[in-house]
Length: 306
Length: 297
Image (cartoon, rainbow over all chains, first blue to last red; front, side):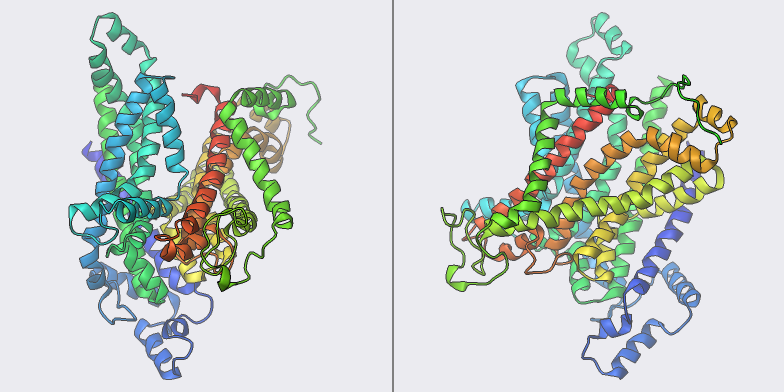
C-alpha cells in the first residue's frame, strides 16, 4: 500500500510540472501584447513598459518559465496587476470559502446520490425508481447557474425563506450548495443504481440470500460495499466539476470565493491573478484525485482480501 | 496489393462494423422509447435551427423600449426582454448558435482526441506514455476551468468558446478511443491483416476505426450535451457569445437583473437549454444501451 502511495505520488510530479507549463503559457496565448492588454488600450506607453518590465515579459521564454518556477517553489505566485498585492494574498482569504462550498456540495451529492441510487436499484422498475431516474436526468441536463437563478427567484424572492446572496451563515449556504450539488447527486445516483444492479445479480449475493441473510443486511452489508467502488471514481470526477462549478455558483450568489475572484480578475484582465487561481484550482484537484485513487485502491484491496 | 479476399470469414468483434450490425443496433434503439423521443427532439431542433428564423415575425436584435419586459401573451409567447425584443424569437434564433457550438466543439475534440487515442492505443510504448501524460495534464484542470482559462486569454467569442470546449472534450475521446483501440488491436484478425502486408495506415483506417466507431458515436452524443451546458455557462459568465447575440446563456446573463419582477426573461432561455441538453442525453443513453446491451442497468 505504501509502495503504491509513493509510486502514485511520483507519478503526479510530471503532471504538476505539465500543469505549471500550461498555466505559464496562458499569458503567452493572449493574442497581441499582454502588457498592452493589461494596461488598457488608452494607457500611456510608459505604463505598458512598466508592466512588461515588472512581469519580465522582455526575457526569453525559458528564462521567464525558470523564474516562474523558482518563484513558485518559494510560494510566490506573482503580483496582481490591478491591486499590486501578491497573488497569494489575494487568494488566501477566498480559498476557504470556495473549499467549504465545494465540500458541502460534494457531501450533498454523495448523500443524496447514494440514497437515491440504492432506493432505485432495490425498487427497480417501480414508480419511485422511474421518478428518481427522470429527476436525475433532468438534474444533470440543467445548467447549474440557471438552477441557482430559479432557486433565488422562488426561495429568496417569492417565499422570502433564504437569503439570495452572500456567504457566512448556514442559511446563506443552502442555495449555493443545492445549486452546485444537484448535478453531482444525479450522476452519483445513476452510477450507484447501475453499480448496485450489477452487484445484486452476482453469485455471492444469491448465496447470501440463500443462506437466509436478511434482505436489509444483504443490501447494505454485502451489495452496497462492493457497489461503492465504481462510485468512488465518479466522486473524483465530480469533485472537478464542483471545483470549477464554484465559478458559476459564486457568481450567481455573489459569494466572495476564489471562483468569483477568477471572474473578476478575468474581467479586469489581471492575468497574473488568473494564472494563480487556475494553478491553485488545478493543484487542489490533482491532490483530490490522489486521495480518490488511494481510497479506490484501499477499497479494492479489502475486497481482494475478503 | 493487400485486398482482403471477399467472403473471408473474418469475424467482427463488434456488431457495428457491418450493415447487419447497424440494423441490429437500430432495432435495439427503436425499442428504447426515451432514446427515440430524444432522437426526434434532436431532429426537430435541427429543423428549427435551419428553418425557424424564417418563420419568426420579430427581429431578434432590434431594440424597441416601448415593448420592454412585456409578460408572455398571444403576441409575445415568451414575453419580451429589457430591450423590448421578443424572447421566443430570440430563442428560435439562438437554436442554431447552440447546436453550432455543440456540434462543432465536439467535432474539434474528436479531431484531436480520436487520433491521439488511436496512436496511443495502436503504437503503445513511448508514444502511449507521452500522449497519456499529456492527457493527464489536461485532466488535471478541474471541470470547465481550462475552458474558462482559455476563453479568458483568447477573448470572448463564439469561435473561442468552440475551441475551448473542444480542448475540454479531447481527453474524453482520447481515453475511450485508446481503450477500444487496444482491445481491437489484440484481436486475431488484425494480425491476419498485418500478415497480409497491410500498412499501419491501412490497418488503422480500414480495420480499427470502423470497429471503434460505436464508442466514439456514444461519446460524441453525450459530449454534445455537456458542451452545450459548458458553452452556455461561459456565455453566462460573459466569456462567450456577446450581446446582442441571442445565445441562451448570454440571454440568461442579461435577464438576470430583471428576473425578479419578470421571471419569463430567465425562465424560457433556461428551459430551452434544459430541453436541448436533455434530448442529447436521452439519445446518448439510448445509443449506449443499443451498442452495448451488457452495460444496460
